[in-house]
Length: 212
Image 1 (cartoon, rainbow, N blue to C red):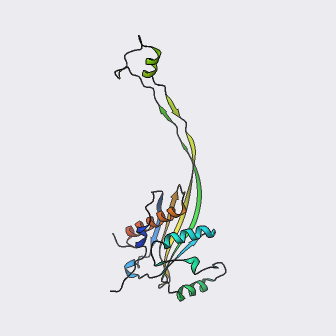
Image 2 (cartoon, one colour):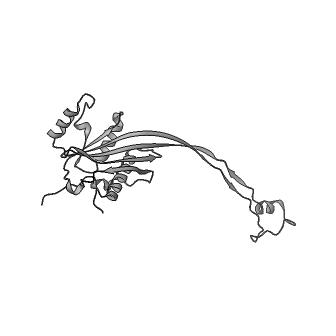
Image 3 (cartoon, rainbow, N blue to C red):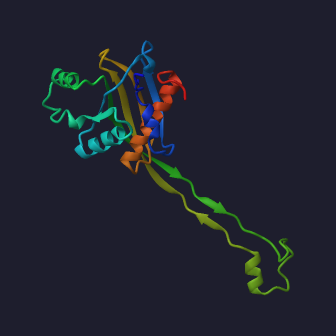
């Protein structure tokens, strides 16, 4: 039986990540669904200036399925290549799809986290306040706990807006695009996992991918 590969299904095998990444907006071509597309070889392109970040991002996605191939293996001098030259390379290598990711914006936001106050505790030896007459200082200290105040502080959060695009090379057009927002980014690889999981979830929601 001929095996049909469905784009992005394998991404579900990526590591589970936190909920610090969410879809901001998305669009799909209403005339195209993955059931109408047969993807056997998909190029993964991370449009970033830093070469190390590009390779980490592309390797992370490519590791999820053999149909995904990193762009740095095929498009080495991207700045010197024209659009026509790039397309010819992809055609010669029999690519039928492209996933691209690019950083749209990086914004910092400072918020104030208010302090917390812990009130005093009154109580006798039996858990009820019975007065302090007849008790020594040690007993009084145990019954009358002081108040504690944890001061507030300012917290800086960086939000990364990333656009993910999916192209059909056979039809030569964009079939899906979405923008995600990620906060509290500490690991690039895990953030890429979270972005792709958010993309898959949204594509299932809008009908681009079949339900589980």
